[in-house]
Image (cartoon, rainbow, N blue to C red):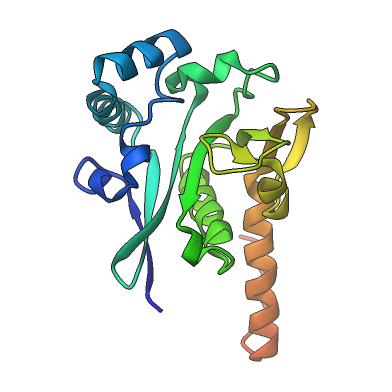
Length: 205
């Protein structure tokens, strides 16, 4: 099974599920979002938002392909680009973090570890860009797919609660913890394969 996680662009935006392509829940404030839906311009607003963030900040999402079939995606950006975030009771997102806005995997591809792979891919991208953490507003009472991710899922992939709330807690994943996990695994593999070599001693100049 070939898995690929490709940066989200306007070219592959049509590979997102139809309802997600026209959803501007996070991209606009509640009033503007409702107006865009009523006017039938939400798809254009979504494209405009992605274009602006790509130009101003850079990559803000990944599309997941399995054997060249689009099966899911993840969207993220600094909170300054996410107007809806200020509407949550546990806002604001910490200044050293990027907000994990939303993610989705087709039901028939769930339970295969793709969610964890998505989070690790986002973590690698943000580490390269000198961010310290990912934060997300989660739904503690999640019952069906929505724009707000289920708290249980985020906790399962390493997030910790930083601000409690009965419905919308704010969760945080320290990026260094994902890096150290990766390094620990690689070190264990090196030892297993007998590939560890002693570091050469540094000589005084």
